[in-house]
Amino acid sequence: MQLVDLIEMTVIGLGYELVEFETSPRARLLRVFIDRPESAPGSGICVEDCVAVSNQLSRVLVVENIDYDRLEVSSPGLDRLLVKPADYRRFAGQDVQIKLRVPLGSQRNFSGVLEGLREDGGDALVCLRVNEAAHEFALGNVDRARLVPKF
Image (cartoon, rainbow, N blue to C red; front, top):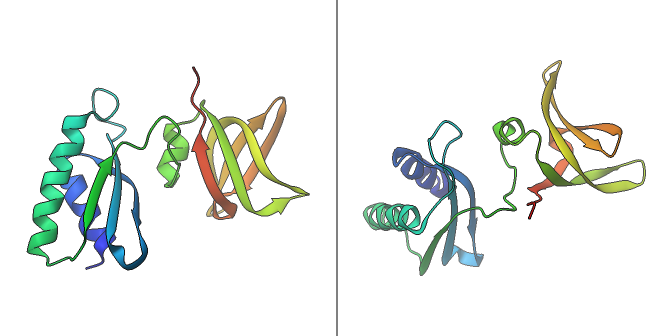
C-alpha cells in the first residue's frame, strides 16, 4: 500500500478529509493537511483535531514500519489548495487564484470568482468569472488553484 493511501485511509477513518500530503526528500518529514468533509457540521480544524490525527497516524506508521523523522498535521489554512474535483464544487462562489500548466492565450495566472465545475463530454471544466468575463479551463490544465481569503 502506498504511503499516501495509508494516510488517507487513516484520516478518513477518523472522520476528516485529506486535503494534501507532502514529503521532504527521502520522506523524512511527513506533512499532512486535513479538513472537515463538506457534509460535517461545524467549520474549520482546531488544534485538538490535529492532535487526534497526529496521534493516530503515529501509531499507524509505527505498525506499518514507516521510517520518518517528523510528522506535521495541520489545517489547510484560509488560502487552501483546491485539489480534487469536489473542491471546485464545494468552494463555488469563493475568490480563487488559478495557475495553468499551459497558458490560455498569453496568460497563465487568473484571479476571480470560482463558479464551479462543469462536465463537458467526460471532461471537467473549471468555470471562473474574472470581472465580467467568464473563463473555462480544463481541470487537467490547472497546475495550482488556491482560495483567496477575504478579510
